[in-house]
Amino acid sequence: MMANGASTPVPTIYQVAEHAGVSIATVSRAFSDPSKVAPRTLDAVLEAARVLRYVPAAAARALAVRRSKALGVVLPHIDGPYYAELLVGFEVAASELGLSVVLALLNPQEPRHLSVLDLLGRVDGVAFMARSGAQDDTVRQVADVRPTVSVARGQVEGVDAFYAENRAAARQLTEHLIEHGRRRIGFVGRLEEGSDIGQRHVGYLEALEEAGLAPAERFEKDPVEASGLEIAEMLLAVERERNDADAGAAGADDATGIAGLDALVCGNDELAMAIISRLTAAGVDVPGRLAVTGWDDTVTARYLTPGLTTVRQDVAELGALAAQRLAALIDGDTSQSPVTVDSNVVLRQSCGCAPDPVPALA
Image (cartoon, rainbow, N blue to C red; front, side, top):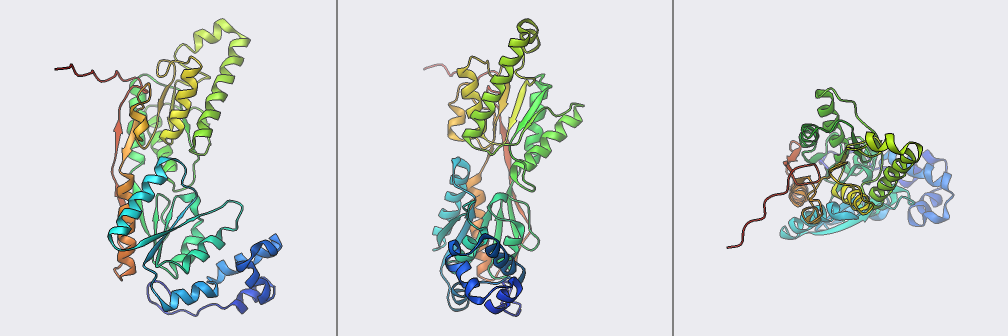
């Protein structure tokens, strides 16, 4: 039975075994205890299950006989404030609807289908959050048997999608840096197709093209604190090498820059704050020599020195809307158009803006 109610033949374990060229016992072990199956054989079984849209027996029985009153969420991780806020918004909305939430974090060392297929037997619908959480084929496979939505990732045909606005805000943010006289503007963040950071990169490129500027160095890094610290160390190392080669020339050339850059557009606040913290500790003037911007407007962003110029988006609302739509789909409502939550640029000092005046005491 497909999620939209249309009948379709249900694939069996025998068909999976035949397609993969293994015994049914091997298929059973692949789903119950994958550590006992050779990697190549396991890949063949999972690929056969994907092609045939096979659901293991335990999950299939659950699909057929009951409602779990639970929503599933698939995430790559819950590190950092963004995913935490997204998940809180989703969970609060689900709780208000009398539903619980089951979370699946996809371990990079584990065949990804296993966690997702296991989740199917415990929930009535699934929300896939972030591009790295699952491949499009996995989302389609789940959507065939369960109501499904996607959040902060490229849309999969037939699956309701929820986004925060990224492209226009990133363009505005980059234009603001250009207005401050920045011309060598780099970008930090891993560019997964259809992802939030991917769309932010598109807006950044549009602003540079409109201004007749070429993009500077791009740092293809995961949006986590460790990556920000790594990038800061790279910038400092390049700067030291240039100074060692020609101290006088390098100092003059980089009066308003570091390592060939005078600004960085970061994919999130976590990256930006780590970069600023390490550079300022090393004596680099931010924003004097390097302007830095973030994204998400986390609480720490406003207390950082200098205050972090960033983009505010209601991530909790995004999660809540996704939970509400998923519950509606489970109750039989038809799918709707993609939903986009607004984002707003927040200007502070890390881009070169003057600090807000401190109000006088009464």
